[in-house]
Structure formats: structure tokens, C-alpha cells
Image 1: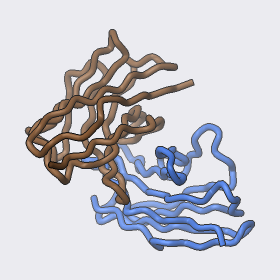
Image 2: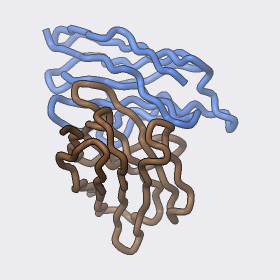
Image 3: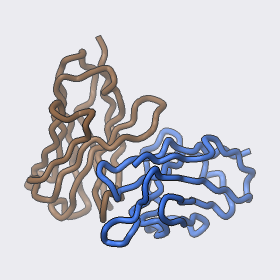
Image 4: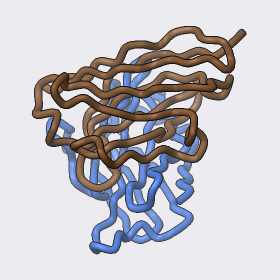
Amino acid sequence: AVMTQSPVSLPVALGQPASISCRSSQSLVHRDGSSYVSWVQQRPGQSPRRLIYEVSNRDSGVPDRFSGSGSGTDFTLKISRVEAEDAGIYYCMQGTHWPPTFGGGTKVEIK
Amino acid sequence: EVQLVESGGGLVQPGGSLRLSCVASGFTFSNYWMIWVRQAPGKGLEWVANTDQPGTQKYHVDSVKGRFTISRDNAKNSMYLQMNSLRGEDTAVYYCARGEGVGAADYWGQGTLVTVSS
């Protein structure tokens, strides 16, 4: 499944909301009924960190300003109020179909 | 605390070989499937290979199939990636990650850089 993210670059002012879209080339509903979409954050110079799994579940320690939603082929990551530490590249990822694939990334820049 | 520490990267000539290692701590290694993911310089993420908990089932993406082999040693809390017939397009940071759920990685190492160049 090809994962297409938009926008590629997202300048956001501190305290403002941000939204990243991810579209799959095929449905990400697994035969078990769940959709295995996760979101990964990569801060500058750091290794990736998972934020969201199975579309909308936040990982432990992830601030509640991050939320995931979507179904079928369209998914979204939202940051309710951007903070300075949120700068970095965000990738969506699907695990429903093998091999797991990543979107091309969205670079969140603080204005 | 979950920790994944990769090693073994370096500069290698095209056609050469390299073996990457990943040592895990902070969790029961044998309970989790494990993954290698790579990131070419300035590029996005690419799933490379994964192995199940006992190390009997192994999957490699087409771009590395027949050249790379994933393996693990649960007694040593370690996972490996044997890379043969290396090409320039294999140049990347290679991350070790812990598998969780279906097709997901919940913890990632800091990565080890592999550079294939003459």
C-alpha cells in the first residue's frame, strides 16, 4: 500500500493547531476488522518515536494534544496546540498489508 | 526502560558485506518480534525485514531479498542483519525496532550508519 502524506511542509505558529493528512492506495482495514495505522515523530537528529497506533491510540507519555483519526484509506494526525518541541518530521505508517509502508513525511516547522 | 542499541555500521565498498547487531534491554526480548528499518540520507523510512519471536519466520522486502538476512539470538537478547552484495542504494541509517501488534514498531534504537561507496 502506497501512503501519501500532505502537506510536505507545514509551518505553524506556536499555540496554533496543525493537521497532517495521510491517504492509502488501498483500504487499511485488516481481515480482523482493525486498521493498523500509526504515526511516528522524528525530531531533528533523533530516531523515530511512535505517537499513535491503530489509528487513534496514543502511546504512553504522548501529550494529549496529539490525536489520530480516520478510516478506510484516509487518516489524519492533529496537534491541537503546537509547541516548540513538536518541530520535526511526521510519518504515517500502515501495517495492515505486508510489507509495512511509510508515508513520505510531513515537516512541521515552527513559525 | 526499553533500550535498543545498534552497532556494526561503517563504510564498505560496493559488493561488500556487513553485519549489524542490535542488543535489547529493559523488556523480555523473546516475547517480541523484531524489525529492521532504514532511512537513506535526507529520505524517508523503509521497512527492511522482520522476524518472529523464536526467529523461525523471517520476512525481507523485495529490495533486499536474497542479499540481506535477519536473525536473532534470544539467549543474547540480540538481533542481527547480515548484509551481502551491498549497493550504493543501501546507504542509510539502519534502525532496530521492537515489533508490537500488527505491523507496528513501538520502540526504536538510535540507528547505525551504513555507507556503501568506493
